[in-house]
Image (tube, rainbow, N blue to C red; front, side, top):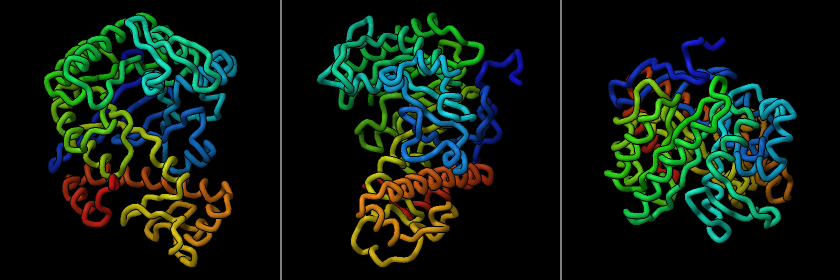
Length: 379
């Protein structure tokens, strides 16, 4: 039961790592609580690709992300509303965050037109014309019934010149005001604002001040991990997170590489999401404690060891590299389900190791140990 004095989603800080400054906490939602820092598997179209909700829950995930744009286009938010909301529609009893659809429509560079009103675009499905406005994004998310609703923002591309980045962040602030006015379910859905500003420290600080001036249950950092160097992303986080409220969750959008998850946690981030684990899984690539492994490579044809001997997931307990490679080469979907399952499990276990390191004031040491074994997953 959520207290009458609390918003629908609220953050409880448990500890700050003395070695690194990373935060350990709990985010409470109408559909349960989860420890942070956490990684959210992405269920773009009301499913984490290749996995059942039961399998996703077995990995330890307690919150997933779904996508407003895709669910609006198909099957339509009205159908999901009539089904009782996204939780019932997809049989997921944990928390759900829905993104605003902004990243998707802005990525349709040849099919969209940006105005102050919103973004006009053509559907990637059938070419039909639509306009996604702040109001429409919120309406769709209200229909979906997610626990966390993201404000509609202009996702600034990289690279962007400073003048464009300034206009973009100012528009994002104006659109946030419209989102707040339109939000019809503030008692059971938490609206998060999004900080923009590209890779300009001055603009990131300006956007942080503007967005956090609205008293919202949480805040996200957008427009990073979009092609900029890792050092530049880390530098922007170091500018932004000290200006963000300590009693609200901080969400870094679109980050899922194991090394990025450590670096973001050290810089004060609580929540992450990315399609990476299932996307690379479908290409036959898996995370291991010793770095990436491309299991479809010929050298694994007669390798009867697990994907990762240190992993406790059902895939590593029951199947070999040789068998999984065979399935992938034979075009059997089960092979890609197994690699996807393992990757999501790996990231959940990775986040648990990060949280344990924070508890024990040794996240800096954990980072050094991780790089000495696994290196960078961005190569």
